[in-house]
Image (cartoon, rainbow, N blue to C red; front, top):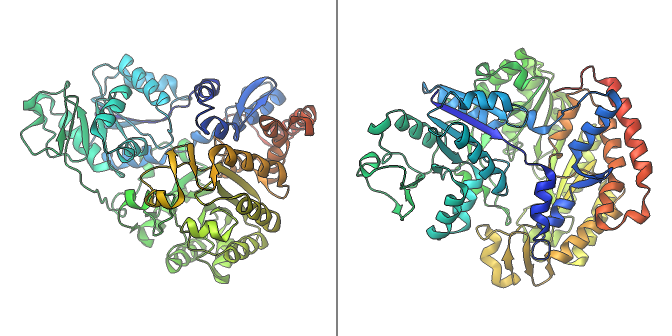
Length: 556
């Protein structure tokens, strides 16, 4: 085996909470986590844990529903990319449920083990995973790439700081590229040559000097070299989406049916002040309608019924979006589909086509219900556009899931109240609010002096608010809003809704599940005296029996 590509591994929740709790006086990370988990009969659980618990209790059989059982798009895309270039590759989609297969594949001593990092925000699970790989297959070279590595390089220009982090993580080779498919292909190709391999022509690499001799590295120009790591030149990859779409025939149908993800474009045309994604993603790229149609036919024939589009701006440009929807209608695919959506780019025909083509729900990155805050964020949209969009979607039976940021520079008590009022007026189906996370490489940091921004991550303050006050406002918002259901970000977010629907859980049952969980969530904010937790337990128990009756087998 040339390369084993590894998806996500989830760490025990208790371990994560313990790690965050020691920092709770200095950063909002701990309270941020408490906005998405709960104590259920004496144990910390995230929402999916609670869902499995009530099903297991009702059936006396273990239930293992989990969002990460859906295809990991990074894993699938990388396998398809490498396989087209004659590299022998295997995958592990979700380590927690594929433990035996993971170990079996590692014992075959693959030349390289590539670990994706799309869903990691802390180093602990990454280190744990790397150590496990090295324990089982010590001769394999561990390659780490993806957003976690990119963020390390973006967060600090200091090579010494980067080296310290990379040494702590323990991988052999790091790929510093937003795409990284070509870099991974080049690395594996050189590793297969053994002592004859030469990394000098493979850009975007960071690797340990102790592992390779000068003759192995070659004599080409290098971007930088320290005592610990060598860096090759930085180049922006631009892999063609049309020729590199996922070949789903490479994967067992059980992995991607009845639900999967699909991407039709790369990049984002917007420049929100809190986001550096457009810079990292590079130039906008679009898959042709013909290629999209071909992939949809492949998925439909395989039995896919639920389709989640992961394009950051699926309905931009609007003319292309309409063309895709009309193509779906003419083919009578009958997908139940879900996507990110921008209310600023839609008209009456758009909403009609969405309904006709099978749209069931959309994610709206609204971020604030206050116009001044939207202007601060450079969202380039008006509150009225949001209100009209939500109304038009609900009118056509399409549920809305909105995200909010609390504490962005310029946030005040008045702007938070405006957001609460917006929620009361528009009543989106689902909502989540997140504490602002400040990174030094995002556009708003260029105005740090203007807003008085100090600190980073979840430990910040600015002229009008600090992270503690922002948490207070967020928790008050959760306790106040009645018209929308709170859907937390940790392991139970927008994608979890179509996932559960594909498992024969109705939208109404998902709504009631979140309604019954709310008192347990509010208990984290010392609001427990206002709610009856035993009543919540009882309601969840009865719901578990009802859902179990709709599911033939309590397994994914």
